[in-house]
Image 1 (cartoon, rainbow, N blue to C red):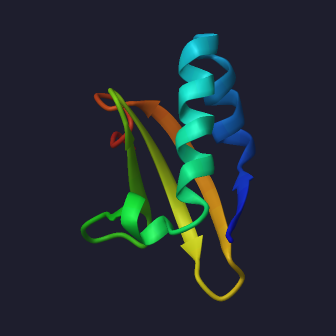
Image 2: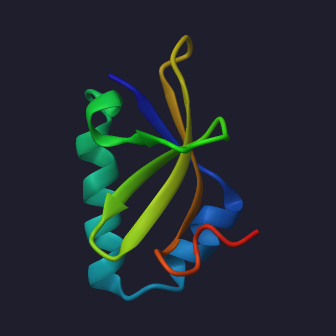
Image 3: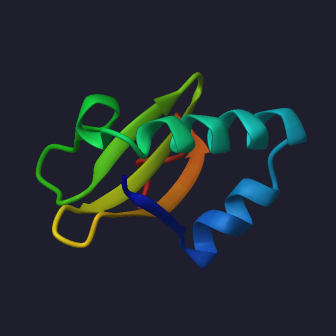
Length: 83
């Protein structure tokens, strides 16, 4: 089973959301721990992966050898892909 590591930036973004959205996102990340390849989708042209959670997205880096899911960003889908 993979372990989840949330970056400082993603943690700040997560705390800005409503409590119900925070719980929903954390729950989805917990489900993805068992087999992340079935939940996450590879982003085109990048090394990161995307997890859809309703209108929100979590961008993560999955380290297969270390069994770590590093969550990089969490935001609404209209804002998440902007640099």
